[in-house]
Length: 132
Image (cartoon, rainbow, N blue to C red; front, side, top):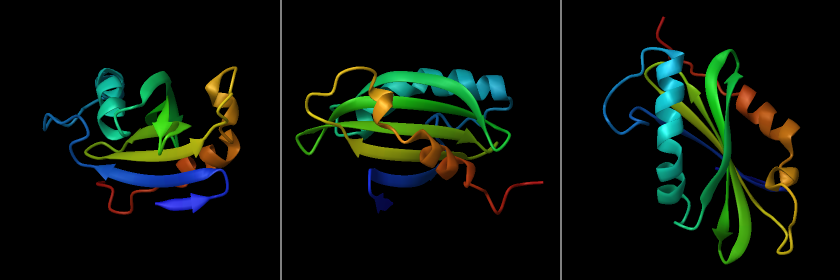
């Protein structure tokens, strides 16, 4: 967990991201399972006040990934959480960025995210013990 001007960053590693004990054997299976999990994950993990705004399939470092954006209230203030789930076969890395947004914010929520910085953070994630 790191605090920077413009928000807080964290990195989480999951052995059972899908909460069913199953390892996804293909990128398509990973994408489908992640997309179905996201709404419940967001509601359960971000103070219960966040809702999924958007998500998209991507690649990060050549690996399948799903980037999502959630909007809600944190510590009584409007906030966004950007997350990227990155598939490492038997593990999932989850890169998160949380930031406060103006009370009177209008327009698309993603305008407040510093995308180049966030993308560099995601691209820097490596698994040192990756299976061959």
